[in-house]
Image (cartoon, rainbow over the protein chains, first blue to last red):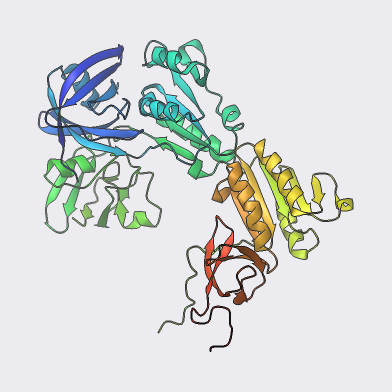
Length: 314
Length: 186
């Protein structure tokens, strides 16, 4: 795993009552470049535990001087978004994992159909300079709650014109997925980022209308859902680690000094897949096949079960 | 020693016998012929779906009917296919049936229209196929032969299992570099 980058907080902007934007600059040297759709993982020192949350880079990939991210304050925050909103000030230093991209625009697409729900607009902000730069055909459908989760709406209206379609739930305006997905030219790729419900609705509607999975791209950044506390045993070192209810297994391992390679930390990329030898597992990822699940789990989201010791091949 | 069949090359195309049961909003069958029994089975499977099936085929135009268009040659058929795909939405599924030469020429039309691999299903009927001469870069139609002379440059070619989807052709390489055209050695 690449070493973390140290950055300085160069600017903080409150965009809506719940969305705050941060600009980071390198403390030393130059920031690594990134491609459209990339994210970084921000390491947040929260007292005795360290949280790592992934955020999309929303700037222009051609701008090598700074990174920008936007953080929505989560109602049920485990502390990460609250830390970003309440603690982080201009001049602070933070550690980031270098950019990774699990949500790049397809080079084969004839038309790009983008669906953003609320803070899910962020990855698309780095798409736009690229798509506009190569005069690609695209349309952006942005669903939000007006005055609350409509970050960047004014800029988008100004720069995209008729290619932006906005849906304000507060004004009773909602996406009509069946109509949109039912009438797209051959060669279209669809991309969705936002709440799980929106992603599920787009994937389901697309599948029903005969879209092959390879045309449907989605990215979810949600903190791992809490669960029951359980104990994990490490077969090779013989250690036993307790995993609290609001810790993911991956976080508990990291906390105990056991580094497992990870990228998305949301159950989709497969990077953290780890073999287990015994115990009942509550699989919550969207990556492993049923067959793989009998021997492998993804500790970023999946958990052991209370009362059944989980034995990892670590 | 293993007695198992050698695994086919990655590039060797795989053909289906019956269509996959996948949702679609529109289904289009392009067939080289409608007169073979194997086509009937395919038609029956496709007609079992709720969505109407549109058929383009080579054949005598008196066999045309509701949702069924017949063409005397491949060029006008491809032209019609191109026009249909230009107006088609994602969710369209294309079924191509015929010999490999026919299938892969239609497949190229589909690819240019923006259809991706899994949106196109292939059913092989007949032995004709395309061969690409790696020495003079020409294409020719051949039968099931394992060896053939290039119609353009005359080199004796070994027909390899290596298939180019872009060209829709198998690779033909010189059988014997010391004896290019099969002439007697001096």
